[in-house]
Image (tube, rainbow, N blue to C red; front, top):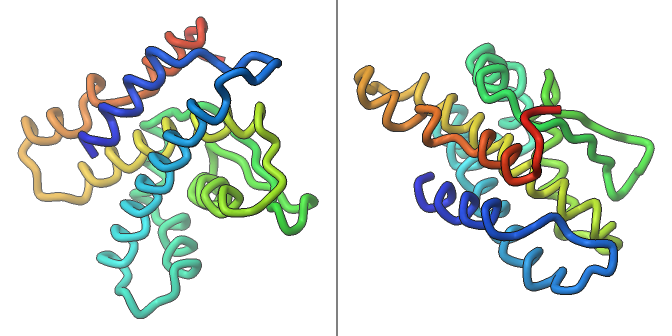
Length: 175
């Protein structure tokens, strides 16, 4: 998580939101796609540890989404809002924050491997999803691991969250 945090923080501090002309788009987008897929691997491994590896990933994610610890972690993370559509059926959509946050963030992951990216909007969607999923996972793991108070602050303290960096780098306090 610290490696993901460091790379994401550097990205948010140095890469400006993509201009309409998309100059440099792929140089900026490819690294955050990879970072996001790595973050989703952490999510998938966590669900395998909690619910067992024999249960298929979709069912593990559904269970996690309905879990009270997850709901509390999403609330504490206070993630940037996203709305994502299923690339296979654009009528289906999910949003974060809220009850479907895990599903929404996982849909972003699933869409990354499909053709027809919306480029400019996908860039912001992936950035926001990195912030939301990262911060939520830190709160969730801190609440589930046997950590001392000092350990919890070290793992999930405000200085280990991406939310403030995201809003600051985008010139806003919070929308």
